[in-house]
Length: 317
Image (cartoon, rainbow, N blue to C red; front, side, top):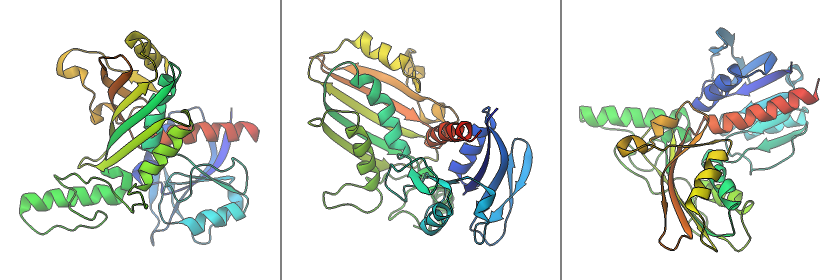
C-alpha cells in the first residue's frame, strides 16, 4: 500500500479541507502530514478522526517531506523555497501558470477548477465530431477566493439584514445579493485570468480554428460552480450519442428526471466528485448542444491532487 509524507499549506481553507476529506476517503496512506500555516498562532487540523497540529511555514524543515501542496494565495516565495529544497510542489491557487513538471524541485500548477469543469464536459463531446465553437458562461461561487470570499459574503448578508454598513473587502463592489460580471484584473482584451485559464485548457482539447468564448461571473453563493455550455459541431450530431458520451465520461453525472427535480443545482454537486449535467438541449439544425452543469469547485482540484499523490507514492516505493 502506498505511503507518502505530505506538507499542506492552507489546510484550514475550504480547498485544503476538501483535499483532506478526499485523501481520508481514499486508500492513500500518509507516513506523515504537516499542515503548514502563515498565521501567528498554530492550530489543529482534523484528519481521519485525529487532531494534527499545524506548523509555522517560516523556518519549516523541508527535509521532513517530499511533497508540498499549496492551497493558500500570495505565498510564491514559499513555493520557490520548497522547490529549491528539492520538493515536488503542487499549487492549486493559480500563483503560477498551469503546467510544469511532476518532478522534485519543480512547481506544478493545476488548472483552475472552473476550467477543469468545462474540460470535463468538452472532452467527451469532442469525440463525437469536429467542434467549431464553444461558448460558456460561468456562475462562480465566492469560495473561489477561499475563506476570505466566504467571510465577506456572510458578513455583507448580515449587514444588509441589520441595515448597517458593510465592508467591500475582496470584491470591488458588494457581492451579497449582487452579481459581478467578472473579477480580478483584465488583460488588454478585457479578459480575466480565470477566463484565460479556461480558454487555454479548452484549446488543448479542440481544433486550432475552434472559436472559444468564456465569461465568468461571481455570484452570491458560497460553494459550487454553475456553467451554461454550448458546443457547436461542423456536422449534426445525434442527441442519443451525446447522452451516451456524457454518461460514459468518468467524472460526469447526467441528471435525467422530469420537472423541477431534473434541474441540477450547485448544492446537488457540493461534496461530490462529479460534474452534474442537466437541461440538455439541441439546436434545430442538430449542430449545437447546450447544457447546464454544476460542480464542487473544491473537490475537482482535490481529486486531481489525489491522483498525483497516489502516482508519486507508487513511484517512491
